Length: 482
Image 1 (cartoon, rainbow, N blue to C red):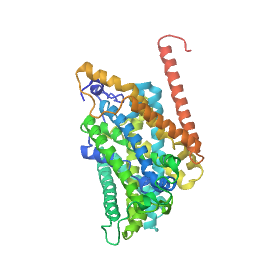
Image 2 (image 1 turned 180 degrees about the vertical axis):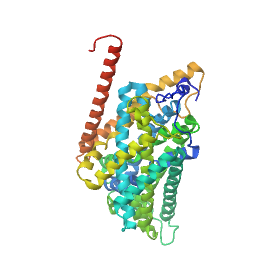
Image 3 (image 1 turned 60 degrees about the vertical axis):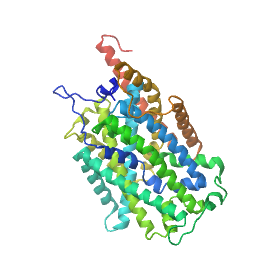
Image 4 (image 1 turned 90 degrees about the horizontal axis):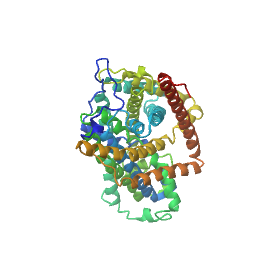
C-alpha cells in the first residue's frame, strides 16, 4: 500500500527528543499474524459456551453460527481494510478518531481497554480453576499470580515473545479443532471402530432442524455472537509486523473463512452425532461428542484444550490492552507517563494494564457475584459498540482512502471490504438488532443497561475533555471562554 494515508505517520506516533519517532517493535512475522487471526477467537466460548446456544436453537445453531460468523466476517474485512491503509497500535480507535473526531477515538479506545482488563480476570480465574483441579495442593490465588507474572514477563520481553506464545497456543487450539472435525466426520460416516453411520436422524428428529423455529435461531445468535470477539487483536498487532499492510491483509483473508469452517463445521459435527436435547448448558458439547466416539479421558483432554485457550486469551488481551492504552497516551488521551518504550515494548502501558487486570482478578475471586458481576455486565455489550464504530469509520474513511490512492497513483489496500456501502448498512443493522434483542431478553438486559451506562460515562469524559480543549484554544487565541 503506497497511498498517502499509509505513508503518513500513524496518528499515534510520538516524536522523540531527537526529532524522530520512537516506534514500537516490529518483531511479528507473517506466521505470527496468521496464527493470531486463526487462534484469536477459538476459546472457551466455543469449547464450553456453545452448549448454551445448542440448548436454545437445537440443530439450528448451525444457522446461528453462520449468521454471527457472516457478521463478524464483514466487520473484519472493514477493519482489515482500514488497518492495511492506516496501520497503528491503536487500530480502530485511531480509525474512529480520523473518521469522527477525538471524542470517538477516546471513547472506543478506553471502552476497549476496560473490556479487555475485566475479561482478563475471567480468563485468569478460569485457567486457575482448571489448574487447581489438577494440583489441589496449590491454592487458586497462587495459580492466578503465576499466570499474571508469566504473561507479564512475556509481554515485557519483546513483541516477538508475545508472538511466539500466541503462535504455539493458537497452533494447539487449531490442531484440537482439526482433530475434532476429522474424528467427528469419521464417526458420522461409521468409519471409526464401534461407530455406525448416523445419517440425518439427529438433524431432523427431536423436533426437526429448527425445533424452536427462527426465534430459536435468533436466540442462538445472541448466545454465540460474542464468541467471535478477539479477531480485532490481529489489526492491533499489525502495526508491529514487518510489513503491516500486507500482514494484516493476509491474516484477515486467511482467518475469517477458516474460523467460519471451524465454528460451523464443529457445530455441525456435534448436532449430527448427538441429539440436541442431550446437550446441557455449561457443559462442553465437545466432551459429549468425544465420549460418544469413545475417546478415553475425553473430559481431561478438553480441560487441557480449554486451559490453553484461556491462557492464550489472557496473553492476547494483555497485549491488546497495553497497545491500546499506549496509543491513547500517544494521542494525548491517556497519561503521558505511559509512553515509555524500552526495546520496542511499551513497558508502563503493559504494567498499567496488568495492574488493573490483577485488581479485576481479585474482585472476581472475592466478590464474583456482586462487585465483579457489575464490572462484567458493564463490558458485556461493549464489543458491539466497538464493532459499530468500526462500521461507521469504514463508511466515513473508505472514500478518503480511495481518493488518496488515486491522487498519489498508489494502490488500494491489501484487503477490501465487500459490498461497500450496502453491506456496511446491513452489518450496522445487524449490530442494532442484536442490541435490541439483548435489551428485550431479561437475561441479557443488565449487560445492555450497564454497558450503556459505562459508554455514557466515557462519552461524558470525552465531551468534558473536548470542551476544555476548546476553551484552552480560545484562551490561547485571546478569545473569552464560552
